[in-house]
Length: 310
Image (cartoon, rainbow, N blue to C red; front, top):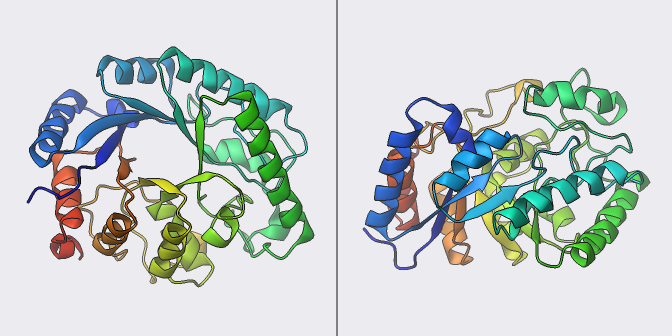
Protein backbone atom coordinates (compact mmCIF):
# COMPACT_ATOMS: atom_id res chain seq x y z
CA UNK A 1 0.00 0.00 0.00
CA UNK A 2 1.39 3.43 -0.90
CA UNK A 3 1.56 5.73 2.13
CA UNK A 4 -0.72 8.77 2.08
CA UNK A 5 2.22 11.08 2.77
CA UNK A 6 5.63 10.60 1.09
CA UNK A 7 8.55 10.17 3.40
CA UNK A 8 12.33 10.53 3.06
CA UNK A 9 14.50 7.48 3.71
CA UNK A 10 18.23 7.96 4.02
CA UNK A 11 20.58 5.01 3.90
CA UNK A 12 23.88 5.11 5.75
CA UNK A 13 27.05 5.07 3.71
CA UNK A 14 28.39 2.36 6.03
CA UNK A 15 26.50 0.06 3.65
CA UNK A 16 29.41 0.37 1.19
CA UNK A 17 31.64 -1.58 3.58
CA UNK A 18 29.58 -4.71 2.95
CA UNK A 19 29.68 -7.03 -0.05
CA UNK A 20 26.91 -6.59 -2.60
CA UNK A 21 26.27 -2.95 -1.71
CA UNK A 22 25.66 -1.84 -5.31
CA UNK A 23 23.00 -4.50 -5.87
CA UNK A 24 21.33 -3.79 -2.54
CA UNK A 25 21.34 -0.06 -3.22
CA UNK A 26 19.64 -0.62 -6.58
CA UNK A 27 16.97 -2.75 -4.91
CA UNK A 28 16.45 -0.17 -2.16
CA UNK A 29 16.05 2.68 -4.64
CA UNK A 30 13.59 0.65 -6.67
CA UNK A 31 11.57 -0.12 -3.53
CA UNK A 32 11.55 3.54 -2.52
CA UNK A 33 10.31 4.48 -5.98
CA UNK A 34 7.59 1.85 -5.74
CA UNK A 35 6.25 3.32 -2.51
CA UNK A 36 6.71 6.93 -3.50
CA UNK A 37 9.49 7.53 -0.96
CA UNK A 38 12.34 9.96 -1.51
CA UNK A 39 15.75 8.29 -1.27
CA UNK A 40 18.77 9.88 0.39
CA UNK A 41 22.00 8.98 2.14
CA UNK A 42 23.64 10.01 5.40
CA UNK A 43 27.39 10.24 5.81
CA UNK A 44 28.26 8.28 8.96
CA UNK A 45 30.51 9.75 11.63
CA UNK A 46 33.03 6.94 11.04
CA UNK A 47 33.27 7.72 7.31
CA UNK A 48 36.58 7.56 5.50
CA UNK A 49 37.24 9.76 2.50
CA UNK A 50 36.47 6.70 0.36
CA UNK A 51 33.12 6.18 2.13
CA UNK A 52 32.20 9.80 1.45
CA UNK A 53 33.20 9.53 -2.19
CA UNK A 54 31.03 6.43 -2.59
CA UNK A 55 28.04 8.26 -1.15
CA UNK A 56 28.56 11.31 -3.34
CA UNK A 57 28.81 9.07 -6.40
CA UNK A 58 25.26 7.80 -5.86
CA UNK A 59 23.85 11.22 -6.71
CA UNK A 60 21.45 10.94 -3.78
CA UNK A 61 20.72 13.98 -1.58
CA UNK A 62 22.98 13.86 1.46
CA UNK A 63 22.80 14.55 5.18
CA UNK A 64 25.66 14.14 7.64
CA UNK A 65 26.36 12.54 10.99
CA UNK A 66 29.33 14.53 12.30
CA UNK A 67 32.25 14.66 12.94
CA UNK A 68 33.45 13.94 9.42
CA UNK A 69 37.15 13.20 9.01
CA UNK A 70 37.96 15.07 12.22
CA UNK A 71 40.35 13.89 14.91
CA UNK A 72 37.96 14.45 17.81
CA UNK A 73 34.38 13.71 18.71
CA UNK A 74 32.08 16.67 19.24
CA UNK A 75 31.22 17.37 22.89
CA UNK A 76 29.21 20.53 23.41
CA UNK A 77 29.08 19.91 27.16
CA UNK A 78 32.77 20.56 27.84
CA UNK A 79 34.59 23.61 29.16
CA UNK A 80 37.49 22.81 26.81
CA UNK A 81 35.95 23.40 23.40
CA UNK A 82 39.00 23.71 21.13
CA UNK A 83 38.95 20.06 19.91
CA UNK A 84 35.20 20.22 19.33
CA UNK A 85 35.39 23.46 17.35
CA UNK A 86 38.24 21.99 15.31
CA UNK A 87 36.22 18.90 14.37
CA UNK A 88 33.10 20.94 13.71
CA UNK A 89 35.00 23.22 11.32
CA UNK A 90 36.42 20.20 9.50
CA UNK A 91 32.95 18.66 9.27
CA UNK A 92 31.29 21.81 7.99
CA UNK A 93 33.99 22.15 5.32
CA UNK A 94 33.12 18.68 4.05
CA UNK A 95 29.41 19.43 4.21
CA UNK A 96 29.70 22.66 2.28
CA UNK A 97 31.81 20.94 -0.37
CA UNK A 98 28.86 18.69 -1.17
CA UNK A 99 25.98 21.04 -0.46
CA UNK A 100 24.92 19.34 2.79
CA UNK A 101 22.94 21.55 5.18
CA UNK A 102 21.71 19.17 7.88
CA UNK A 103 23.89 17.36 10.42
CA UNK A 104 23.26 14.98 13.32
CA UNK A 105 25.56 15.24 16.32
CA UNK A 106 26.04 13.60 19.73
CA UNK A 107 26.47 16.60 21.94
CA UNK A 108 26.73 15.91 25.68
CA UNK A 109 29.43 13.88 27.43
CA UNK A 110 30.35 14.24 31.11
CA UNK A 111 34.01 15.09 30.56
CA UNK A 112 36.34 17.96 29.78
CA UNK A 113 38.91 15.67 28.21
CA UNK A 114 39.25 15.62 24.41
CA UNK A 115 37.57 12.51 22.98
CA UNK A 116 39.30 10.88 20.01
CA UNK A 117 37.10 10.20 16.99
CA UNK A 118 36.32 6.55 16.41
CA UNK A 119 36.32 4.74 13.09
CA UNK A 120 39.17 4.86 10.57
CA UNK A 121 41.05 2.18 12.51
CA UNK A 122 39.93 3.05 16.06
CA UNK A 123 36.99 1.25 17.68
CA UNK A 124 34.34 3.04 19.70
CA UNK A 125 35.54 1.50 22.97
CA UNK A 126 39.17 2.35 22.20
CA UNK A 127 38.21 5.97 21.64
CA UNK A 128 36.10 6.21 24.79
CA UNK A 129 38.14 4.28 27.35
CA UNK A 130 40.17 7.32 28.39
CA UNK A 131 37.06 9.19 29.56
CA UNK A 132 35.38 6.33 31.46
CA UNK A 133 34.31 7.58 34.88
CA UNK A 134 33.46 4.63 37.18
CA UNK A 135 31.82 6.93 39.75
CA UNK A 136 29.01 7.84 37.32
CA UNK A 137 28.76 4.40 35.67
CA UNK A 138 27.10 1.12 36.59
CA UNK A 139 29.53 -0.93 38.70
CA UNK A 140 32.13 -2.62 36.53
CA UNK A 141 30.51 -1.34 33.33
CA UNK A 142 30.83 1.33 30.66
CA UNK A 143 27.08 1.97 30.95
CA UNK A 144 25.80 5.15 32.56
CA UNK A 145 24.62 5.35 36.12
CA UNK A 146 22.02 7.89 37.26
CA UNK A 147 23.91 11.18 37.36
CA UNK A 148 21.00 13.34 36.25
CA UNK A 149 20.58 15.04 39.65
CA UNK A 150 24.24 16.08 39.89
CA UNK A 151 25.02 19.82 39.69
CA UNK A 152 27.68 18.90 37.13
CA UNK A 153 25.03 17.50 34.79
CA UNK A 154 22.96 20.69 35.00
CA UNK A 155 26.08 22.77 34.36
CA UNK A 156 27.01 20.71 31.31
CA UNK A 157 23.47 21.03 29.91
CA UNK A 158 23.88 24.80 30.16
CA UNK A 159 27.19 24.55 28.32
CA UNK A 160 25.44 22.62 25.53
CA UNK A 161 22.80 25.33 25.17
CA UNK A 162 25.46 28.07 25.02
CA UNK A 163 27.68 26.19 22.57
CA UNK A 164 24.74 25.35 20.32
CA UNK A 165 23.92 29.04 20.14
CA UNK A 166 27.54 29.75 19.19
CA UNK A 167 27.50 27.00 16.55
CA UNK A 168 24.38 28.51 15.01
CA UNK A 169 26.12 31.90 14.90
CA UNK A 170 29.25 30.43 13.31
CA UNK A 171 27.43 28.18 10.84
CA UNK A 172 24.03 29.72 10.05
CA UNK A 173 23.72 27.57 6.92
CA UNK A 174 23.91 24.30 8.91
CA UNK A 175 20.99 22.77 10.80
CA UNK A 176 22.29 20.76 13.76
CA UNK A 177 20.16 17.96 15.19
CA UNK A 178 21.08 16.52 18.59
CA UNK A 179 20.78 12.73 18.74
CA UNK A 180 19.81 10.92 21.92
CA UNK A 181 22.88 9.01 23.05
CA UNK A 182 23.56 5.38 23.74
CA UNK A 183 23.81 5.27 27.56
CA UNK A 184 27.51 4.72 28.13
CA UNK A 185 30.78 6.53 28.92
CA UNK A 186 28.96 9.43 30.55
CA UNK A 187 26.76 10.34 27.58
CA UNK A 188 24.02 12.54 28.97
CA UNK A 189 21.42 13.29 26.29
CA UNK A 190 19.30 10.18 26.85
CA UNK A 191 15.70 11.27 27.38
CA UNK A 192 13.31 13.97 26.23
CA UNK A 193 13.25 15.70 29.61
CA UNK A 194 16.88 16.68 28.93
CA UNK A 195 16.79 17.02 25.15
CA UNK A 196 13.81 19.36 25.10
CA UNK A 197 15.74 21.90 27.19
CA UNK A 198 18.75 22.11 24.89
CA UNK A 199 17.12 24.37 22.32
CA UNK A 200 17.82 22.34 19.21
CA UNK A 201 16.16 20.10 16.66
CA UNK A 202 16.40 16.41 17.52
CA UNK A 203 17.24 13.10 15.89
CA UNK A 204 15.55 10.21 17.70
CA UNK A 205 17.58 6.99 17.65
CA UNK A 206 15.37 3.94 18.22
CA UNK A 207 17.94 1.51 19.63
CA UNK A 208 19.65 4.13 21.78
CA UNK A 209 16.33 4.94 23.43
CA UNK A 210 15.51 1.22 23.73
CA UNK A 211 18.73 0.71 25.69
CA UNK A 212 18.35 3.85 27.82
CA UNK A 213 14.79 2.94 28.74
CA UNK A 214 15.83 -0.49 29.95
CA UNK A 215 18.96 0.68 31.80
CA UNK A 216 16.98 3.33 33.67
CA UNK A 217 13.78 1.32 34.17
CA UNK A 218 11.59 3.51 31.98
CA UNK A 219 8.99 2.55 29.39
CA UNK A 220 10.35 2.78 25.86
CA UNK A 221 7.16 3.85 24.13
CA UNK A 222 6.35 6.43 26.80
CA UNK A 223 9.80 7.92 26.34
CA UNK A 224 9.47 7.89 22.55
CA UNK A 225 6.14 9.69 22.86
CA UNK A 226 7.81 12.29 25.08
CA UNK A 227 10.42 12.97 22.42
CA UNK A 228 7.80 13.31 19.71
CA UNK A 229 5.67 15.57 21.91
CA UNK A 230 8.48 18.14 22.01
CA UNK A 231 7.76 18.97 18.37
CA UNK A 232 11.54 19.08 17.82
CA UNK A 233 12.12 15.65 16.26
CA UNK A 234 13.19 16.20 12.64
CA UNK A 235 14.70 12.79 11.91
CA UNK A 236 14.65 9.21 13.21
CA UNK A 237 17.55 6.76 13.16
CA UNK A 238 15.52 3.61 12.73
CA UNK A 239 17.04 0.19 13.36
CA UNK A 240 16.34 -2.90 15.43
CA UNK A 241 18.01 -4.13 18.61
CA UNK A 242 18.40 -7.76 19.62
CA UNK A 243 18.40 -7.00 23.34
CA UNK A 244 15.45 -7.81 25.60
CA UNK A 245 14.47 -7.66 29.25
CA UNK A 246 16.16 -11.05 29.65
CA UNK A 247 19.54 -9.42 28.95
CA UNK A 248 21.44 -8.28 32.08
CA UNK A 249 21.89 -4.51 32.11
CA UNK A 250 25.67 -4.66 31.93
CA UNK A 251 25.49 -6.90 28.84
CA UNK A 252 23.49 -4.44 26.72
CA UNK A 253 24.84 -3.06 23.46
CA UNK A 254 23.56 -1.03 20.53
CA UNK A 255 21.22 -2.04 17.71
CA UNK A 256 21.83 -1.14 14.04
CA UNK A 257 20.18 -4.36 12.86
CA UNK A 258 17.78 -4.70 9.90
CA UNK A 259 14.15 -3.86 10.60
CA UNK A 260 13.16 -7.45 9.87
CA UNK A 261 15.27 -8.69 12.81
CA UNK A 262 13.09 -10.30 15.50
CA UNK A 263 12.88 -7.81 18.36
CA UNK A 264 10.73 -6.78 21.30
CA UNK A 265 10.80 -3.03 20.60
CA UNK A 266 7.40 -2.50 19.00
CA UNK A 267 8.83 -0.66 16.00
CA UNK A 268 5.50 -0.61 14.13
CA UNK A 269 3.98 1.40 16.98
CA UNK A 270 6.98 3.72 17.03
CA UNK A 271 6.66 4.40 13.31
CA UNK A 272 2.91 4.94 13.72
CA UNK A 273 3.61 7.51 16.43
CA UNK A 274 6.14 9.20 14.16
CA UNK A 275 3.54 9.44 11.42
CA UNK A 276 1.01 10.98 13.80
CA UNK A 277 3.67 13.50 14.85
CA UNK A 278 4.35 14.25 11.15
CA UNK A 279 7.97 13.05 11.35
CA UNK A 280 8.79 11.84 7.84
CA UNK A 281 12.57 11.56 7.70
CA UNK A 282 14.03 8.16 8.57
CA UNK A 283 17.66 7.07 8.41
CA UNK A 284 18.32 3.34 8.14
CA UNK A 285 21.62 3.32 10.05
CA UNK A 286 22.08 -0.34 9.10
CA UNK A 287 25.20 -1.82 7.51
CA UNK A 288 23.34 -4.51 5.57
CA UNK A 289 20.25 -2.52 4.66
CA UNK A 290 18.17 -3.97 1.84
CA UNK A 291 14.88 -3.60 0.01
CA UNK A 292 13.30 -5.76 2.74
CA UNK A 293 13.85 -2.88 5.17
CA UNK A 294 11.96 -0.55 2.83
CA UNK A 295 9.08 -3.02 2.54
CA UNK A 296 9.03 -3.34 6.31
CA UNK A 297 9.01 0.39 6.94
CA UNK A 298 6.35 0.94 4.28
CA UNK A 299 4.07 -1.56 6.00
CA UNK A 300 4.69 0.05 9.38
CA UNK A 301 3.98 3.50 7.97
CA UNK A 302 0.76 2.26 6.39
CA UNK A 303 -0.37 0.65 9.63
CA UNK A 304 0.23 -2.93 8.60
CA UNK A 305 3.37 -3.57 10.62
CA UNK A 306 2.12 -6.13 13.10
CA UNK A 307 3.69 -9.03 11.22
CA UNK A 308 7.14 -7.53 11.80
CA UNK A 309 7.02 -8.06 15.56
CA UNK A 310 8.34 -11.41 16.83
